[in-house]
Length: 148
Image (tube, rainbow, N blue to C red; front, side, top):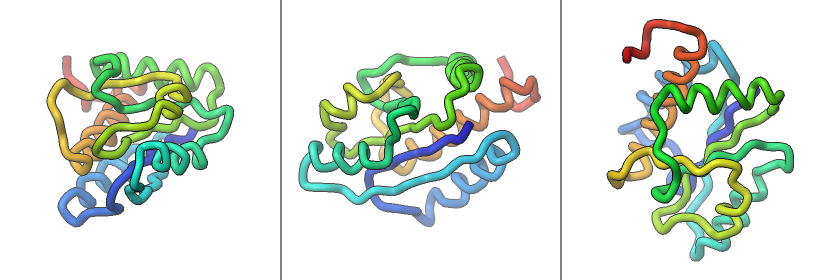
């Protein structure tokens, strides 16, 4: 299975790029991972169209949204493991724009995940997401990174 992260907003950033690369390199030991950065648009609808153009019918889509379900790291690992068992070829994670995402994205999402009740800038969300994806992989492999 491949992980694809679609993120609205500026591309790579000097402040967070090293952290993202650090975890991305670790994830690559388990599964391929790809990032696609999409520029902001004038409306959520236009951003939604842009996001949808990168999603295939068979993709399993996880939307990061403040109205989503709160999950522990073990649940993230279980979600990923279940998609692997379902033979999903690509799991797509969406980080929407500053004002959220269009209704079309909400409808397309197979799962909506709330990282926190706190509000974070997009750059930090990227780091938190990639770290949690790495943590999930280590949980699945029984490695010592995650402590309960």
